[in-house]
Image (cartoon, rainbow, N blue to C red):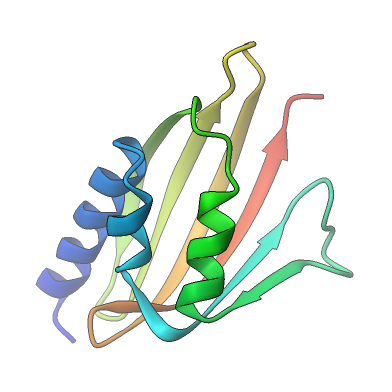
Length: 119
C-alpha cells in the first residue's frame, strides 16, 4: 500500500473524529477489524477488545456526544499510522491518547489505543 493511501486514511479519520461523524469513522475499519483499548478502566493485563466493524460502530455509538475531539501529530508509513488524540468533556476533564493503526487495503485492520485521563 502506498503512503498516499495511508495519508488519505489518516485525513478521513481526523475529519470524521473531529466532526463527530461516527458513521464515516466506522467505514474506515475493515469488516474483521480489532480495536484494543488500554486505559484506566481496562489496564494492560485486561484491555478492552472489540472485534468486527459492527461491534466497533456500536462502541462508537456509546461514546458521549458532547465531547470535543482533536486528532494531531500523525506518523504515517505504507501500512501503519499513529497519531495523538485528545478529548475534552464539557466539565473540562481531558483524555489524551495515542492510537496506532495497522492498515489493510486502506482500511484499519487493528487499532491499539492507550489513554491517560484527568482524575
